Length: 139
Image 1 (cartoon, rainbow, N blue to C red):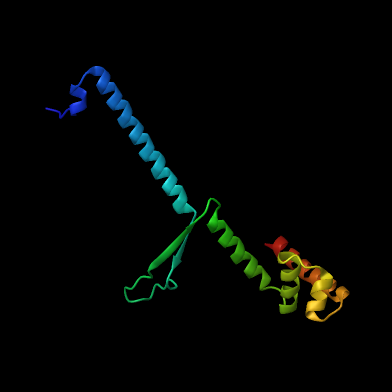
Image 2 (cartoon, one colour; image 1 turned 30 degrees about the vertical axis):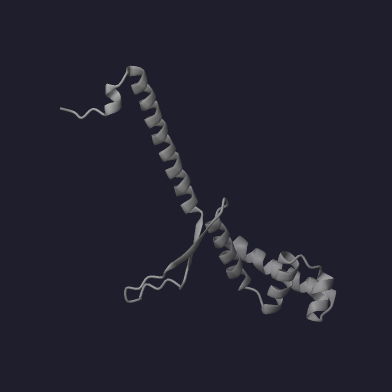
């Protein structure tokens, strides 16, 4: 014989309220699970050591996780891509582009910082951007 929960043996009205309550709990549990799953997709794990597959059974210890409403993985991939692309440039081109594009410095400020003329900074910047443009259009 099937086991019938106690609340179904109650008054039909009480049983309906109990069923409604249980259904609400189930929906809330599913909503909570989906919310947690979404947060895990946007977490960035911080480990106490780099991950090495050749270790003798020791795993890095989880120190912290960062969770954000934005796509952290996408941001990390973007930063890695920018670093890889910047490696195509000379050290001087990297300095000029980092200062102008990422720091918002003017060409004159960069020229003073590097001890060169403003037209030289402009040429360096234009050559670097041209090199990056060619690379990005080729790939």
